[in-house]
Image (tube, chains in turn green, purple):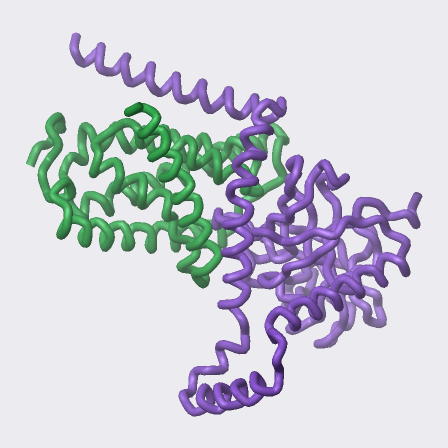
Length: 180
Length: 276
């Protein structure tokens, strides 16, 4: 019963996330439409729940996003999931502080990793002749906007949440290398 | 020892997740994930369509006129008077009329040109910032395949099909940075070049020889040199010309004939009967 309840909650979160992502992309003007709402949620969820479940939420959300994307299948799924997995490890071992600025640092790192893996995977696909997509200067401008606005919004959201919920208050997690 | 065990645990987790991702990718290409993908599609499609329609409504150019309170007041009063005159639901009527007009133009275009096409509804757009795409409600089951041309109204090019699923497809718009379309300018020289997009912000035509004469307002159409794209589909008109003496080619900035952010109805050309 408990498992069923959890599954429904996760499914609801996934649908809500994809919906929110669409809401931002469809309704906000450029460059605000580049805000990566999925990463904001994943980082905040990770810091609040302290659970590896975030990697699987990332996997399924990226899978849903992938269905509607124009990039070759697997690119977002791989880059998104692996970057969240690495960030989760970094959070557990290095960035253990719970504060708005560490949330900003984590989301920035996550996005940098995500886009780096994205570029590497796409380049590999291109080398093997599996895609014709290329990168131009403007791609990096868009990634820059995405990084800036996602990072700022994460900081604001985390700051607001920390005022209302105890689990967001600055307290280092138990097993970090650098406890504050 | 503990560190070694810790690291091997990490490597195991990493490998497990990578294997799951690889299996998902393989299952997708084999088609085993189609039922799940179609289920997700049926779930997300209504929400996507609703948000897309809201986006079109919010993004309406007319609403930007209301920057001045006086103008807003005048517009409000005019609207009120108009509403009194019209007893029917103006919005629904107008939308139906527009849809009807668009469909008529498309039908007329197909009859004139002898193309086989599928009428489609736009149900969403890209959520990833790396592309400018639309999601349409028809897919492989309706005969659509990758590379098919997508048009709207009386033969105005919108883009090309870039991804096909059973029940829906993704259209790469002409203003997407990855979009490249062979085109001709209707000028004296019948200049040819390549129409390319610029991240949804602009559309431009490159590789136009320096010695050819271009004018603002010249119409640009598809050249027919490309597979799957028939000749003569309207793309846009020249808005600006960028000519540098040291460059071998000149460049034209294009204003598309249709607002690519507001497409609701379109058609996918699935075969050009003239060429058969």
